Length: 107
Image (cartoon, rainbow, N blue to C red; front, top):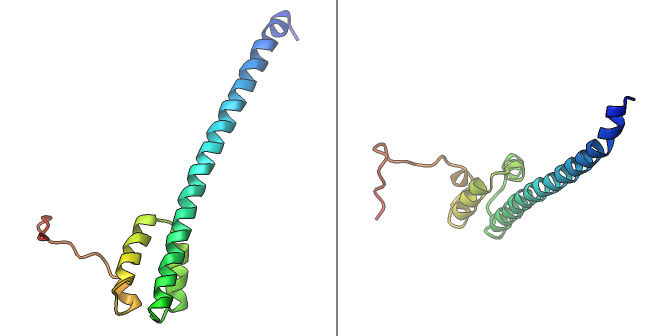
């Protein structure tokens, strides 16, 4: 170890500690955000399954797996809203209908 290394060691150690603290804080924040997103999706999926059960709509195993594996809360929200009035599970998963002109005709 050179004299310069000895003189720089406290600064390097301080920088490394600061970097580790910052990295841990950022990692925890990211982990909390991911956990919240995952939790919201799981809750929405559970609510969707509850609605389907309460409405006594037959739910094939593949549809249950599709619901439980979906992580996009907006998709789950759309399916949830459809499930409130759908006559079948197939209606819930139907692709969105969009006007060809790109303009909404809803009033």
